Image (cartoon, rainbow, N blue to C red; front, side, top):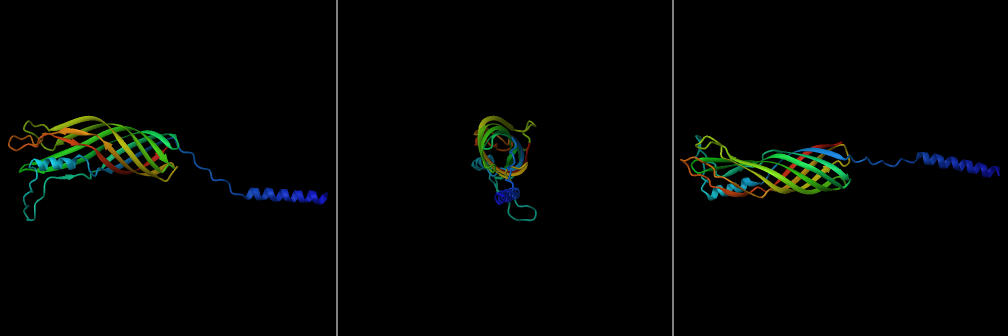
Length: 237
């Protein structure tokens, strides 16, 4: 009996000691419900390329004259499209894989320059906000969609004969498709790559070059649909 009791005591001691030495299970941090991110990006396409085509069809495609030091002139039309734009997003996680949020920003959609003996410079800007519902895969990959309201402004850099800018403004309903890649997962601060397709639709812009001494660029219906590629940082709270 004494040997049995001693055996049980030694066995209990060994089991208790081995249990105390087992590593504790890793605790997965709780996902924060709110997140906010600030992005900077650029628009590789957009309406500028389509305005170039409109200028070419109406004769605003002359080559500029040579400079004082010789060399070939500049071919027109051309656009400055890779201009920085800002985007802000706020999201609330209903579930770890389901989130709703608001996204908005101010974007420069490019500058387009034409030459018909006289120069015309057309600028495009857009501001917008959208409500987005998104699916999140392991808190790394995100895809979402939602309705959007767009406010566009297209104007000519220069003055017409009445001394005021030729400007055209529109408010449009459309939608966004949002794709994001966020790292690291389930941390308070994160880095994010983002691609958004924005459907704006076609807008009437023009006429431009409203100078009685030069031909004008007539009105055109131009698609303002575009893609924005951006990167930024965010925080959960």
